[in-house]
Amino acid sequence: MVQALLVSASRNSSCLAHLLIRVEIYANSSLAHNASENVTVIPNQVYQPLGPCPCNLTAGACDVRCCCDQECSSDLTELFREACFTGVFGGDVSPDSDHLCSVQESRGAPGWFPFLCVQSSPANSPFLGYFYHGSVSSQRRASFRVHLRADLRDRSDFGYKQGDPIMTVDKTYFTIPQVSLAGQCVQNAPVAFLHNFDVRCATNLEAYQEQDGGVIHAKIKNGAVGGIVTPRVTYEEAADPDAFITRTGTLLSNESASRNVNVEEHYIFRWNNNTISEINVKIIRAEINAHQKGIMTQRFTVKFLSYNSGEEKEFSGNPGYQLGKPVRALDINRMNNETTLHLWQSAGRGLCTSATFKPVLFGEDTLSGCLLEVGIHENCTWLRENAAELLDSLVQATHVAMRGNSNYSDPSDGWLEIIRADAADPGAAPPVSVHGLCADVPARLHIRILFSDAGAVEGMTQHEIVGVETRFSTVNWQFQCGLTCEDKADLFPVSASVQFIKIPAQLPRPLTRFQINFTEYDCNRNEVCWPQLLYPLTRYYQGEPYSQCVAKGLLLASFFILAALLSNPWTRTCKA
Image 1 (cartoon, rainbow, N blue to C red):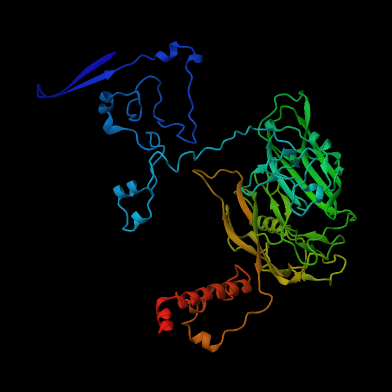
Image 2 (image 1 turned 90 degrees about the horizontal axis):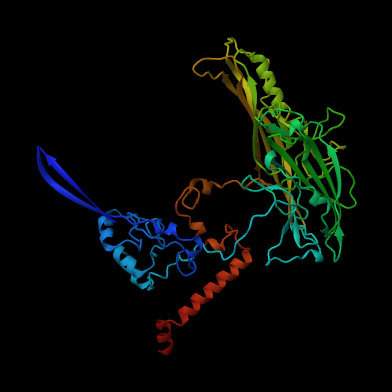
């Protein structure tokens, strides 16, 4: 059906211009046929684009402004040729490569480009098949086992090595939820041999599914041919379920059925050489309402212990500290003097009253904090004392171990006293007291740990702590008012930071008077660094062993000498 519309433009009762618009309307005949009759042929996207014309949205009809629509006649295309869709939606799904000679000739290119350009058909685009993978993976439920890919090999029958994934008899990984580098909780993360971890994952109670049945029936390879280890599982009830669950809704009735959820799972692997001799699992459960809504914080720990070790305190290294191990601390003022430095592990609203502690790990710079509720009529002395007490609770120690295996029962076995600089004085009050304003409130605790390399054992560098300092920072707190100052609690943030500073084991050589006065060869104060002209052959280059650099340099020099001997002037001299 063809429809025509005449548009006239007039001024002062006089017609100035006419515009005739003709529209062809097609009936949607595709709805009159059965679905089985309309078979869509999907092209192979390896050889041609899957959707060559994305703006072609209507079957059997012309789409306005879609110049790549093959169903548009030439007359219709002339009506909107100047307003065609551009980009990928307009049909430019395979843009021409910049390396084609034809493209660079039209856009302009440097003079040397004709020697490097590519002569190829525009249909053979490098973007063709860019999103083609060739396989489809279906979503699977989270479980404690994940199947191997076809290209992976199971070498657990010949013993585990550090970092190897723990295998089951079904050729699958033994997995436990872990936290990825992006901070997200990965449900199907393989457990690595001799790698300890302690993570927390937030889970929605509506999407939670009990999975400990897979642990009970799991059969894990112990590292020997035909050897199998079955985990031994024990259950305990959580003393305070509300410490793990943040409720987001109110139950209308408490008469509904209840269910059990796992709030903590602790795995202990006993190892002997390159085999696993025993696996003990302790699951802490909490009983909640079946219709309870909220966020549950789960904790998963994995610890590898030697087969002949007891329940003694685990070392943080032998003798030097290992990266990621807790910093050992000692409090000589208590009977039970074993302790460590702590940071906050916030949960829920981030309040200090509900925050838990986590140990300071060696070599990891960390910043943590929590929120303290303060009112507009708060007493400044109480606020200072409360903030100072919260910050002091993180360092309930007097000494820190220099090495990872320092003996707790012997204070003279490599223990350093913690230097407390600028200790907070909560009793010192300003001369003027104003409601909603407090000066010099302790707000941040800085923990600086100095360490150095203290030799090597079997090629492994041993780290040693040489000093620990704690320092407070104060701020002036003022109650934050909106349009009106209401008598409600404000949030005062307190934080703690840990910084590991590596110092050289030996003091650097002092500069000579010539180096101080003559700065032409100083690479730090000049753009041109002459001492590093032959950088790969100098001691500054640490990418390869020095002997290999010298060997490669001599080989390169021999090539230059050979090229000089075979050059034309040299051959003329020999002939003469």
